[in-house]
Amino acid sequence: MFYYLAVALIPRISALNVLTYHTVRAGGAALTGFILCLILGPWVIRQLRALKVGQFIKKEHVADLHALHKGKAGTPTMGGVLILLSTTLSLFLWSPMDNRLLWVALGALLMLGIVGFLDDFIKLRRKHNDGLSARAKFAGQILTGGVMGLYLLFNPITVNPTYLFERDMTDWTPIARAIREAQTPATARIWNALNPQTQTIFREAGAETGFHQFTQQIMVQQLNELLEDPTLFTAEQWVPEADSEADGLLRRGRESLSTRELLRLNRLFLEHAIPDQFTATPANLHTRVGVPGFKSWLIPLGPLYVFFVIFIIVSISNAVNLTDGLDGLAAGASVVSIAAFAAIAYVVSRADWSSYLYLMYVPEASELFVFGAALLGTGLGFLWYNAHPAEVFMGDTGSLALGGAIGTMAILTKQELLLPIIAGLFVMEAASVVIQVASFKLTGKRVFRMAPLHHHFELLGWSETKVTMRFWIIAFLFAIMSLGTLKLR
Image (cartoon, rainbow, N blue to C red; front, side):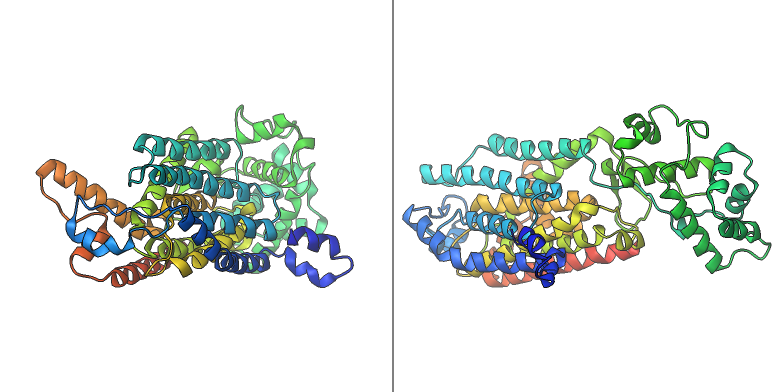
């Protein structure tokens, strides 16, 4: 709302132009989300108390744990509605609602929030800790991941390389010679399209002493200007291979292509005209997965990317759900992971920064930065009431939604394999459950006193606040490590 209001009033009040910057709106969304949580929190808690939406504490499994947590019985749960409500309102105020990544992220947040809400509601009706069946909960998570995966498969969010950088040139001398000699229709077209000053540079380039840095910069600049020419080539100069990326673009018709798609087509023409002299630019980046620490190692998944998205959504939402066992633990750790992904969203939304760090460029991720900021603010606002001793628990409504949001941000920033590092604490918690169950079924012995891992340390004698604070520190260290991998590329 503020964005559209600013756009309408900028001709009269130019200072309102700052509200069109996503950095400013991200700050506003975070602050608004936090304030909304503080304002709405007491009212939501009162409503939950009136509805008798209280937490049930299991007694039959671990007596020691029941003794530690029995005082929490009756504390309102389903507090995740406060996160969903405050985040949605904050985004409505600060984001333009025409950004598809924003809708994908918000849709995943709300869909998994609904799954968690149904689980919590059934627990309320039954007055028991058993809510939705495992099959029904998995179905909701799979549906969310499947819808997202299919959308991303047929609606790419990444941008294949268009403009040239100096590092894209494998060998300057053959490039200059090929353009200068113009022995093929394609290179002749490039040569004729250059202005006389640039042609002089190409004639003089390639001396035995090599290229000067300034000459390289001029050549790249001139070639990039050439790529902006929508009439750079004709069918007589290049007939792309059938079913190739270029063939697909041409079959759509030049008049239907966006400016960026025309640039991409010209870049492919340049690579065809002077083969093996430019760094290969892979197609279908939207279904490729980058490996942290490696700038050019991309795993092609093709249609299998849909199942990969489902796996991420199911895994991380359940991992956050398992972590939600102590006051403030899941909320605080989620805030850390969301902050890290919000920072990454800002980086990948900028062509210059993403190129420098060898990250996939996702131009629409700027609003994902605002989404992450809004969720960060509401997470902190919820933590205000969820800190020990908690006045409200998020329940599955909040934990599944937050887990889904973290997974969605990893997917939409094209940093899927960075998720296990950023969300390392959640991975540890989920792994402890898998290890415990596997060990007991295979050997009849337990590795931990109790799983998830936070309960193990509680039963070792750590106080609840000590476990929570130390796990927050671990989550923060994982986030710092993950951001460090970006530079390793």
